Image 1 (tube, rainbow, N blue to C red):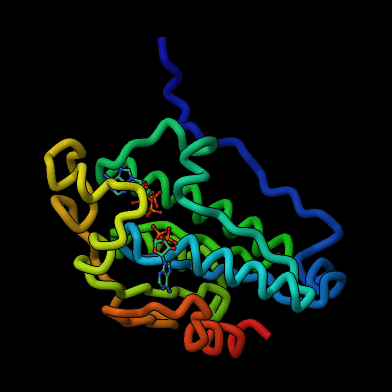
Image 2 (cartoon, helix red, strand yellow):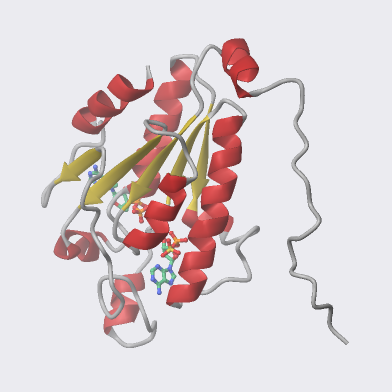
Length: 201
Ligand SMILES: Nc1ncnc2c1ncn2[C@@H]1O[C@H](COP(=O)(O)OS(=O)(=O)O)[C@@H](OP(=O)(O)O)[C@H]1O
Ligand SMILES: Nc1ncnc2c1ncn2[C@@H]1O[C@H](COP(=O)(O)OP(=O)(O)O)[C@@H](O)[C@H]1O
């Protein structure tokens, strides 16, 4: 017979003597989450890695959480139905919060197509420490790039529920950084980085 006790009862928070502020002082930086959202092919992983490298160069400890990569491990049990995407983002939000609590700049790059899921992640962080970056590239541009050939497969009906083709993408309404461009060919992401470093440094 299954237990009637809810899964998360009889658990208690245990505080440790070394806290977030101590870790931030040690690292001389502020822990936060940079959340990059956008269509497949919009440049999320490229921006995440560029940003990670720049922060590293400036002596800041950062860590990239990337959709494709996490789906090889922590989230390999999840698919692309709305509830799976929600669970994917919920887990990542919790992991990102832990990284920020550890004092790191956590860069999360996920399609994260649902506004509600992104807002739930934002709600886990204190004011100012969740920086949402929207890579607003047109579907046409992303489809023309198609580095993995997934749009082609989706158009041919060989992938069902592909974001932007036959699955929704809900654009942010109030993000911290909005990178718009139909022909954005600049790998330096100067504007994005400018806006971000103002918040981060
Ligand atoms: N159906 C469908 N829709 C969208 N994307 C798909 C799909 N199937 C596989 N892929 C590949 O999965 C990558 C996106 O994973 P994410 O974890 O970021 O997605 S989500 O946030 O849960 O929506 C995505 O990577 P990116 O191109 O880097 O975005 C794709 O390579
Ligand atoms: N700013 C950019 N200008 C031109 N091409 C880009 C830019 N950013 C990414 N790309 C290219 O677009 C493709 C998709 O980039 P990627 O970072 O993998 O996107 P995503 O992680 O959103 O799927 C890659 O071939 C990448 O080299």
